[in-house]
Length: 221
Ligand SMILES: [Zn+2]
Ligand SMILES: [Zn+2]
Image (cartoon, rainbow, N blue to C red; front, side, top):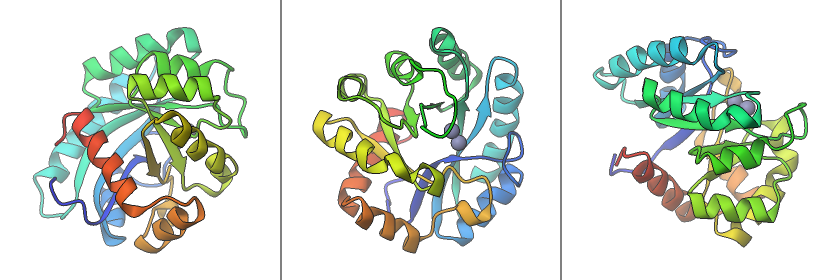
C-alpha cells in the first residue's frame, strides 16, 4: 500500500453489528466512492468479539484476493465495555485476529462510562473513536502510547471535532479522519473529505502522513 491516493477509512460498520450491508457490499459501495482501503470495525464486546472477528476475517481475505480494486482490514470497535475490562478486551481481540482495535470513546451524545477514554489510551488501543471532550492530559498520554485520536465525519459527532484536533495538535497525538459509516450515505467521498479537512484546518499531506504512520503501526506497510 505504497500509493496513498484515494480514500482510507478505518471506521465502518457492516450488518455484523448495526451497519446496513455485509462486508463485501460495504467494500464495493466504498470502492465506487473512491476508497482504496476500508477497515471494518463492527461493534464488539465480550459476547460478540469472536464471531465478529472470525466472520470479518473471511470476508477480508476474499476481498483482498479479488478483482474488487479495494483492500480491506479487520478491525473492531470495542463498545460500552467498562473501563476496567477494556485492556483485557483489546488483548482478546488482537489474539483472535483483529488487525487493529478501536474503542468507542466518550462521545457527548451517548451515556459512555466516564473513564473509557483514559482506559482505552492506557490499554494502548490503536484508535480512540469520537473521544468527545478528551482532556489535554489524556491526549498527551495518547501521544506517548501511539493511540490515534479520531476526527469523525458523522454529523452527530461533529460538535467535538474542533476540540479533538486542538488536543491532538497541542499534545502531538496522531489522528485519523474516519467516516463511522453505517450506511451508504455516511461513506466518504473525495469531496466530503476535502470539505471536512478544510473545516478543521487539516492539510491533506498531514492526514496522509498520519495514515502512513497508522499503517506502519499496525504492520500493514
Ligand atoms: Zn462508536
Ligand atoms: Zn462506530
